[in-house]
Figure (cartoon, one colour):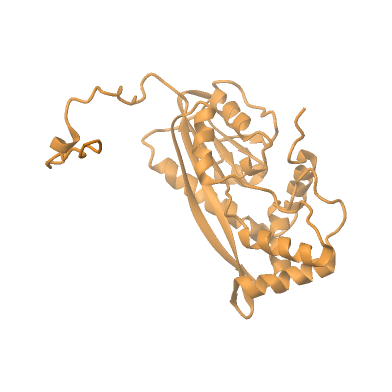
Length: 276
């Protein structure tokens, strides 16, 4: 049996704790919700039965009051073919089985229903990752799991295809942010519910000398000015459609009726024979 990468009980505790902290830390969710609303406005379709999968249902219910809210879980409480739109909102980067999550969302869609996903991508907190690695090697002589791995954009389009979606698209938005210190960044991550939920992470508190050394290294490499350091977040957006016969299909190889050179009004120059 494969061991899970993430501890879902720990993740749930992180989410509950975040709900009582600074609402301003939800700025990434605000940005994601704005982007999703804009993308939906560009789709020539009226959705009547949307559902949203999230670890912050109160936030997303306020932004999309007509949507059914589905709690993040390894087995989603969502009915088959019940929805014409399913949004997976800021939770996929914590999924032990992201393809399984997407498959469950596809099954919940009616034919030609739309799936939208938004999650944190691989460039997120690359500064913090490298800084903590260097600081921990210096202060403790080794490494322990601290920051969760995240999927790269180039891989996620393939996951959409594996999940059975038609017309898959993956794109991203890089979000630069600045903080007065590494501690301030970590407090913001706590308020976001985005502190580590790795199953193998250490169960003791991070030593102060490790944080102090990380802050010094961070300022050395990623300072914006003497008083602030930069941090990068990457939002990845996924789009896919539940397959339906009405959707446009790719042409069969060799079925073209016009040469590309003719369409471009140019002359076709064949490759020289390399064997002469």
